[in-house]
Image 1 (cartoon, rainbow, N blue to C red):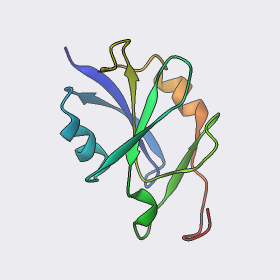
Image 2: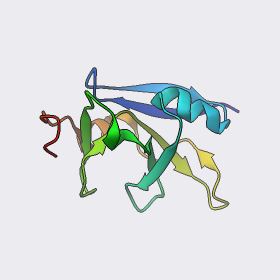
Image 3: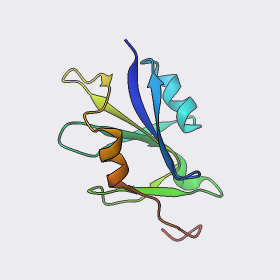
Image 4: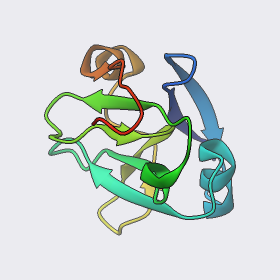
Length: 111
C-alpha cells in the first residue's frame, strides 16, 4: 500500500502530505539531496529524514521540531518506523506535526 509521509519545506514554510512508495530514492527526490540522515522525534519512532549535507549548502534555510535540540537544515520528510525497522506512515497526525514545527528566521552562518 501507499505510505503517507509529511514534507516539511522551510523555503515555503509549509507542511504537506506526500505519498511514499518505500523506495529510498524517493526520499532524496523529496528532500532534493543526494545523501540523507535521520533523526527520531518522538517515542513512537516517528522520524525526520533530512539532507545529510544540508549544513554545507548556500542559501539554506532551517526548521525546528519541538523536543529536538538542533535546528534542521533544508527540507524534512517525516515517516514512521515499524518494529522491523521499515518505514511506515507516521503515528503523528499532520496537525500534531504542524504544532511541533517552527520556521526560525536564521541568517546564513548563524545557527
